[in-house]
Amino acid sequence: MTSRNTVQRTAIIELMKSTPEFISAQELHDQLSSIGQKIGLATVYRTLTSLANEGRLDVLRSDSETLYRHCDTERHHHHIVCTQCGRTVEVAADQVEKWMQEAAANSGFIVTAHTIEIWGLCAQCQAAQA
Amino acid sequence: MTSRNTVQRTAIIELMKSTPEFISAQELHDQLSSIGQKIGLATVYRTLTSLANEGRLDVLRSDSETLYRHCDTERHHHHIVCTQCGRTVEVAADQVEKWMQEAAANSGFIVTAHTIEIWGLCAQCQAAQA
DNA sequence: GTACATGCAAACTATTTGCATGCAG
DNA sequence: CTGCATGCAAATAGTTTGCATGTAC
Image (cartoon, rainbow over all chains, first blue to last red; front, side, top):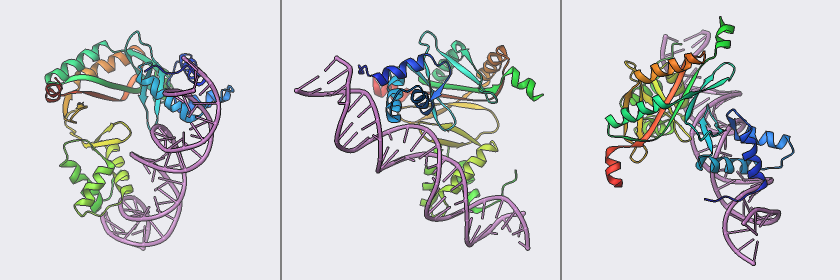
């Protein structure tokens, strides 16, 4: 459960902390390489998986790849992603969360995990399209 | 937009209609093969993708693979999947749908697509676990 | 000193694509 | 007959893994 404090792991954690958007393992690896941080792609994958398991990263399964983002442990939220420009905004999740629990309870289920992904058009792109 | 009426396409549609759970392209291919239906894996992928685009199949992105299920076009709904036994129940989505539109509107977004995936424990598996 | 983390390359999985052939319309 | 659908095999993309080496503790 306690992971070792290696240069690579630290570099990943720091970069994730300063990255507000979701990012793929490959992008992360590219960025680290471009700033001179020598690190193997496999290590990036291993570390991201480990951090996600520890709950330190949010995971988003996009089209064909897995995206990670520094997790704001304070509050749980979801995102709306603009399919045109990629702009992302957060959405508080309290209401849905409650709805889910209730809906599940109706069928005798207990909710243990969930993902909500919302795509749409942001104001700018709506205007651009008109 | 109008697809041709081939034996393979028909076979896939029929099998999907009689399959209540979500199923992967590979499983579908296996089943068709096992009942003597000769069909290429690539065709299964192509047809499933096409049917999903036409809105005739629901798509669920599971762990590392994509699952498809015959779509009940009547009403839009989501699912709760038991992580233990795989049992699946449907959940009407009206409320969440509305919540999403509102939440999006607050940020100037228009919702164009969404996925909601809920995992949990069904009554049976809760009991088995206790 | 010892076990766990890393790097590299090879392996793997799910899916996609190029191209020649078949069959629906 | 004409073009889209198919089958096969090879290609691809993202991710995982085996193994030798490095290093945190």
